[in-house]
Image (cartoon, rainbow, N blue to C red; front, side, top):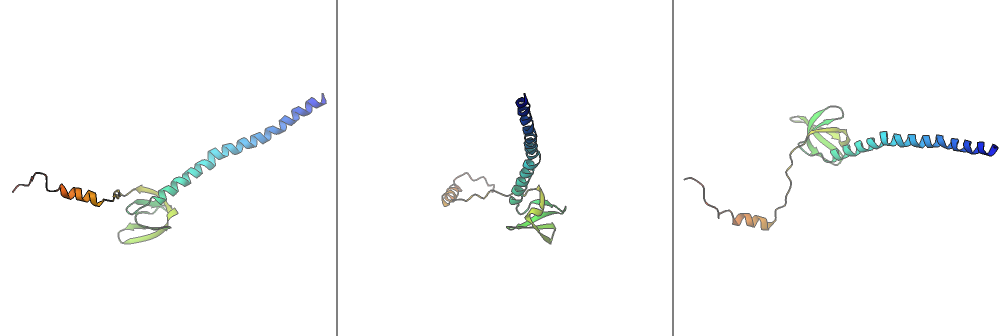
Length: 126
């Protein structure tokens, strides 16, 4: 009978280890993982900055992006005033500037446009 009591006590010592592992698992999914996701989204936002974007810095300064370098962003809070900030100092983008897609035209495409320019009916009124 003495052996049966010891085997029950061994299973009881496994329970605190299981609870600690469960606690770490919950902490990971509730705290660490969302923080990593927010950091990744912030890095993507900061890498997509371009001239003309309306942004807010972590200090609350509103301005328009005038220039973007590797590590710095030049903001123009008012006309003629330019301030340099580190890229991580940009908290959020209020509105993005419309940047046209850069499409490289081939000489063949330009020739097609030129050849069809004079073939349509002349709709000008004299």
